[in-house]
Image 1 (cartoon, rainbow, N blue to C red):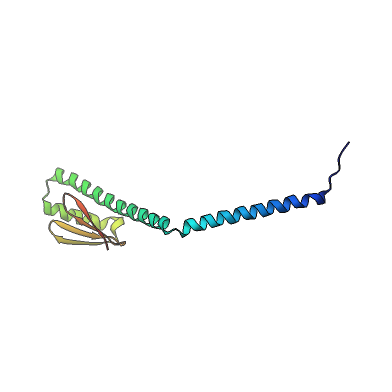
Image 2: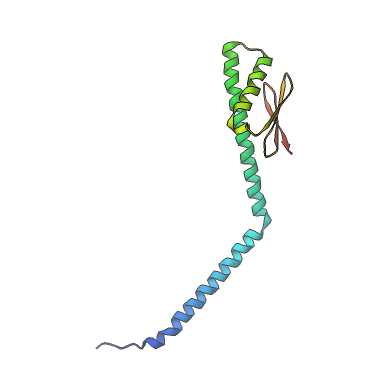
Length: 132
């Protein structure tokens, strides 16, 4: 009625399954190593990080400008006072604490971030001058 199976006959199946698992893991490892060896992937990641940092800085600079433009329209401040206030706000902003902020003249502020992003700031716009 009941069939008896000899357990010793099943050893081949487990050995084959272990070998298959090892082969599959070796294949997956070789594929993942090739992906990470490809410098293009790493370069794209670095470019994305670089662009994100640039956009964070640019966004903060533009936000400060917009705030001061509102003040200017409400208080009728001169362009010099506008740029003075702009410089003051940049220096007090936490994002730019370690940045180099220099006033080149009454109409221009040069901001260099710790990562080397260079921004030329005038009343009407911010120009990205590149990375040092």
